[in-house]
Amino acid sequence: MESVWRIFAEAVGLILDWDSDLIEIIGLSLRVTLAAVAVSCAIGLPLGATVGAFRFPGRTAIIVLLNALMGLPPVVVGLIAYMMLSAAGPLGPLELLYTPAAMMIAQTILVTPIVAALSRQVVEDYYCEYAEQFASLGVGPFDRVTALLRDARYSLLTVALAGFGRAVAEVGAVIIVGGNINHATRVMTTAIALETSKGNLELALALGVVLLAIAVAVNGAAMTLRASAVRMAYA
Picture 1 (cartoon, rainbow, N blue to C red):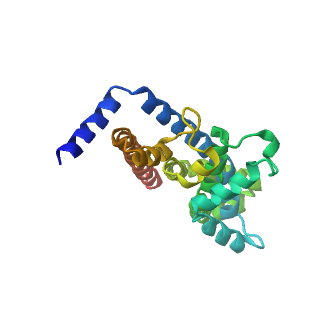
Picture 2: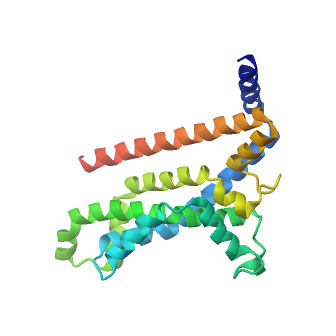
Picture 3: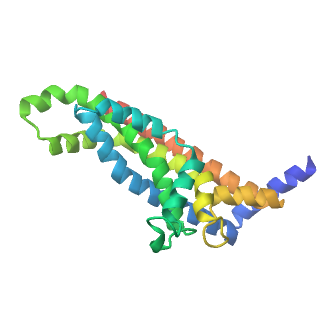
């Protein structure tokens, strides 16, 4: 028990001292994840809004596909990204494999279906309220999607936060395409796995505490935004 408390105390010390390796790993994790979530939202939000706001042949199949892709196994996503980025793949000439960009691509593939599926449901709920108004005013397709995205912005922020939470905790895909290279592609989740296997529990625990803190902060922000959206809806 004494050794457990000693490890915990040293882990807290690393955090409080702003250990250089710790900060480097956290910084890379946040940069990769934020970039992936930004790209995922740029693709997933308009896609989800379009599916939620319009009725067209094949719509049900697209919804089923998006919902199914939400459960993509990370290792499968990593394998797909690896095949795309390897020397024999279509993106091989870009030489992105084992770089932060490769990890961002893998996370984007993983998160985009989640953002699209969740935003589809949010926008569809809003569309059910506004459908008659859109029809009476003759609102065009582009203006319809824009209006729905604007009015649902608080709920959609919670969707983006859900995507961030999913991406920042990912390990399987990023370790395949990133390689967990020290000072290059080592992020929090892959570093925790490596340092634990090496017996460096202090650094692993420090990263775990930071990762848990980020998860709690993201969930707290999501709940706050969701409550704000509910208050505005009934205002």
